[in-house]
Image (cartoon, rainbow, N blue to C red; front, side, top):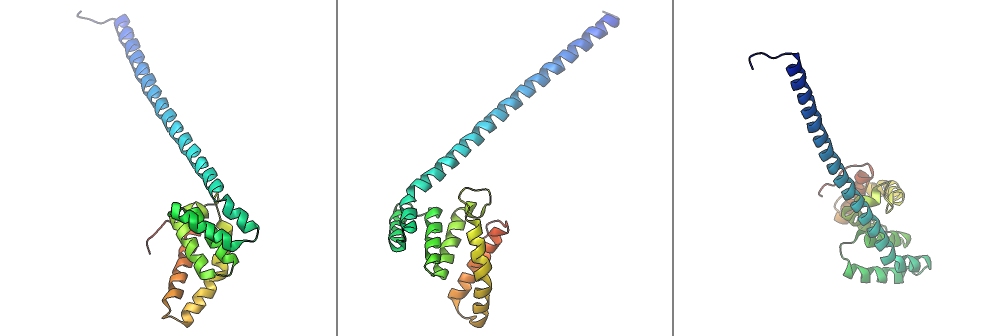
Length: 182
């Protein structure tokens, strides 16, 4: 084959276009498999998250019922019992913080809010079904100036300083800052 005519060039060009199209289709097909796998994983995570929320609501329902019935002491005892079974569960911490705040134990309440947010940032996330953002924001808005003033009056008081640090931590998380170590 010494020379190539138009037909040979056209045939080679057509084959090249077919091969490129086939390669593109294969690559696009693999991309859709990746997208499907990513979609499946996202769906599984969402289902697991919703199941966890339902579990927490069911687990802590007796505490909420006692609290609504005005039996704060019994609710705190039930929280202690649940904390022995689920020691690193943030939802118990958040409920304990709310009950203590209602009873006027502000310093202890702040400590529990800090622990809860450290364990699970969903409590300051606006979009989370677990969000307690407005209550935490109100606590910070009211208590931060008061504890800052008290700490200036008594700079040697470590308990006041630690509570103030906790309030600053909550304020930073409400502002959208990432977790940091204290």
